[in-house]
Image (cartoon, rainbow, N blue to C red; front, side, top):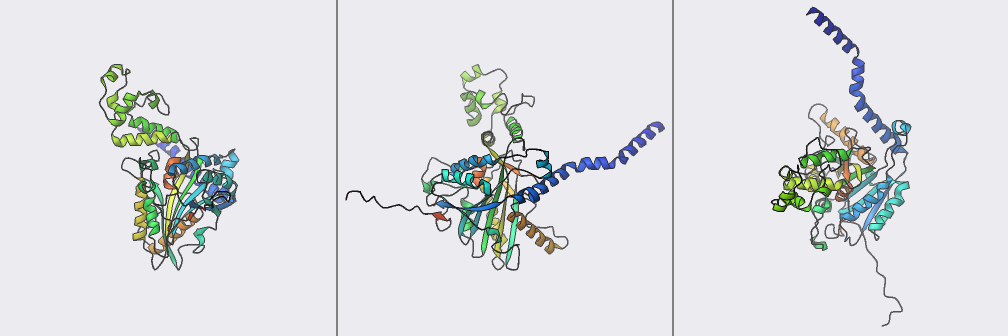
Length: 429
């Protein structure tokens, strides 16, 4: 017994003497993440020449957000991963990004996109391809209209990054949820209608800025395909030992239409189907609730789309005499719930929100946090405390698209009126 205690004490002494090794292993992952984050945000992206473009939308937008999804599909070719170890670890090279921004000020709605200057032509071509009557102009950065730093003596702020409630494998509600057979403009329902309504009701001296930063990625950078496959298998009640694959051996392409009807609509299993049912195919295990069917449909649909890593944030800026986060911020949070359901994903403020624990130096800590949130917004920086989320082109188009006049009247959204020429002079009278 004494020998056993002696051996154990010696083994423990060896383990303790290697404390530096265990500490290095423990800190490797967070240190790696912070190193790469700093290299990209303070080195690689700082060397890029950026331009801020304002898009003035056509007077009559008859297209759905699907048109904007086509734009994001077209500009995904900005994907350019690091070529070697030096690019990745030393120079901080990463995919260049787009910053999609919707700004409400003085009762107006402005659409901006911040893009590397070398990618400007690609972006403009994609937008004009879907909205030929739009007008795109390079403008000064609006974030410094109130000074180089906020808050200041005249203006106060409230800001937050938005985090997903569930893992990003679960999709948010996308624009096709609002689409119906009624295609007339006055019958359309827009997923951004709540946000535009807030913008149109802002008081003099109040502004709301919403920013969605996106960068094209593949499964090499983020293993979203594997995670999506796991979610689909869980929803379909597939055994874990099934052969790996995007949709597994029971993919939709192999399921007869009658079985699909049973799964998605909950109808009884036809007699002829029971007789011809393949051995081992258990429909009882695969029947889905309406909520599960919706998650499955959107998740499977996203597998065929390009994806971006992205981060959503907003900032409320107001003169101190009209500053009211209880009114303005609550309304913005309500607008973001348009994308949320209980069975799908949704947004909530993350720990960057303008709030501190009432402990010590509360006012000072609040002031420092507001300054930091403004700096991150103005420089379009990724949050340092977590990785970006994965969004499909459909999800991005839901959060950033150009509305019709019925949703955002001309008094709010800056529009380009189409000038119609007179009749040709040779026309007989």
